[in-house]
Image (cartoon, rainbow, N blue to C red; front, side):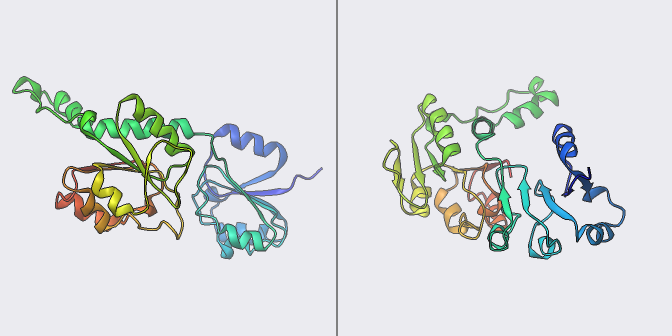
Length: 257
């Protein structure tokens, strides 16, 4: 029996590829010598796309396949997929939420510790043998920090629980106030940035959050401020962040995206 055709847009874990190959004839776009020829060949028969954010799944791509039934994103984010267009055209879009919530929260705490305690810098100092000349200067402490979380969803709450163990005060900003959490809510992102010295981003991407962490927010965070981003890169105005770091408008940043 002939297996249905599936387009894989970029490399994935071998176990995932093996499982997909059991049910589909898998076509690996990134390995094709002539990608355009492959897409033309699959136009009448393709039923599924497995995407890992390597290629934009926009109308220009999805519209080439009249039999396309599903686009599956291997990850939490699916902002590289035009889900609205897909929905209007009867194409199901799936992702993998909640799989890495705790791990992302761990990463956020790791980035916070690295920036506050300057762990990467001290590691380089040690490896360079400079400790023989003089000790590395004392760095900061979490005890002096107050964290404002941008996006108190499942991951944001997991981060907040970890911060409670460090006795670090937590506040948050989001689209609306949540009545069932013990943290203070700020309706204004700028006002929250003024009141904290760590801004921790867990917000999703998309038009509603694009570049909302801008020059005004970074200036409000201040010269002792730390920016941590484990959400989406598009949430931050990258040019404004680079300028803020160069001008020491904020102290430092820890970026996972």
